[in-house]
Length: 611
Image 1 (cartoon, rainbow, N blue to C red):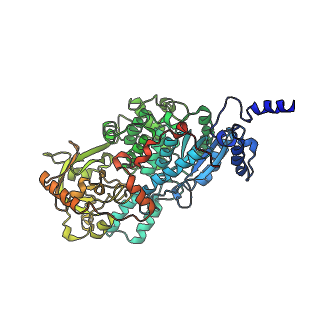
Image 2: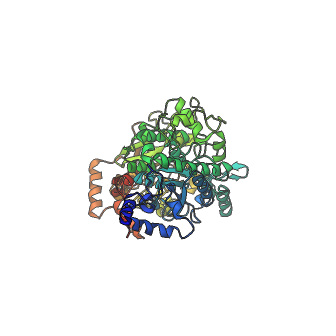
Image 3: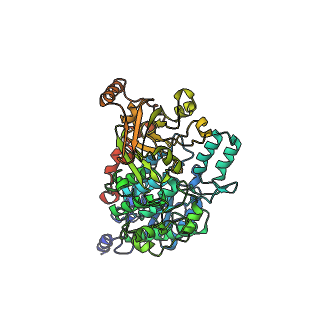
């Protein structure tokens, strides 16, 4: 009789979770088909005070992907914000598991933080896939932390929500707004002109960063967190809240609450990151005057979630979108005014009323974009312009092609009146310019020789820098925004056309030609360019060409190949060598080529047991 009863009990499902609910974490903590492994997984997670009843209760286990650390000052306040996220998760009936992410700090990492974006992505994929997590809060902020987190969430495809850290408070110097990054580039001009000394240069730079938070300009950090919201991956209004404001901690709590909700609803990144979401993202980027780094990161996210998106579409979808946000570097104001004016919801409402975005795109709070932004109003029309009265009517990127490269982009929203007058206003040849090229082999060469009089750089010279792409640098450096020689700056000439196979800071107001693909190190046309060559850039036709014959270019290429190709510095670390071997070009998102085939891995497979 006892034996029969025991057999009957063994047939019952021995799980503490409510009937009809299956969570991914139950594979670890509540698997009646494998009690031995369940015990093994459970026992160590109990050693700091959690109970078996909690972990087997059917409560969602929500990860907190912590990107804050002492090495990442732009994100460091996330160490405190995570407490409010935890409160929200707990109050909504979940259990929070916080874990560190690989640090990425734009201003701290050498040779470039972009080198670490893919490394952080790989690391986070392994965590999200291999640990008992039902969902995750992605704590983003500094430039590359946002795409790294979103790329990983897209790959694994468990429920995920973005909590950005917010911009710093406004910086001020002698009564003027000092925007992060932007004021540094201006101060460099003042230093070169001899109007300030080294000490004042340092003081100006420090003044632009008065509090915790990421860049207070519309640099890459503000751009990427705004675009995470435009994609629908964060709660409405999240991106613009300044880091020290009380609303930042409040939305951290709300994000924690919502993280539990998306687990129960099984709302995944693939449900949000659709073709319509990416089109909305491109339009939003133009309207806010977003960073030239955005196409690299957004194209990478699209590739990892399986949405086709080309560099050309940044022009076809986004070029004729007007500039609505009056924020440095394309405008006057900084993050605090932008937030008070209404932030991204107000911008998206202007675009919605103009029928420029897909209002039916789904977002992470379970509502459509239109439902989220219809009530958003512009509180200050000097900061966020009406769609009918923008700062510029066409503010998107121009995509250029020619024998210099297959593609490169130019940010038109930052073309100054001075630059337009000197280079783009010839009545016989409007929106085009030609000039003599001076070529630098990386930033070290530029800094060494920019003031060399033998280069004969004048007000019509085109400055080129190569060897600074994904392979050549490696990781692609923000070094294309080169200033003219000091003698020209003293004459009032503060900008020359700059072209390169690297990137530039999103805080820079330089209308450079950037992200050239393929780069010189990958055999692109830039590798064939020589100082003294004439180059033509035509914005009407979208072309960029060395003005030498095809026969001459063929001869140069044969010589280059005979000499072993374009030479670049050797790798200094194992990761540099690994990434160089498998990284794609900037136009295609600078992704790791073998990684893009791994999509929705949480749905296509289960990780094997570890014992």
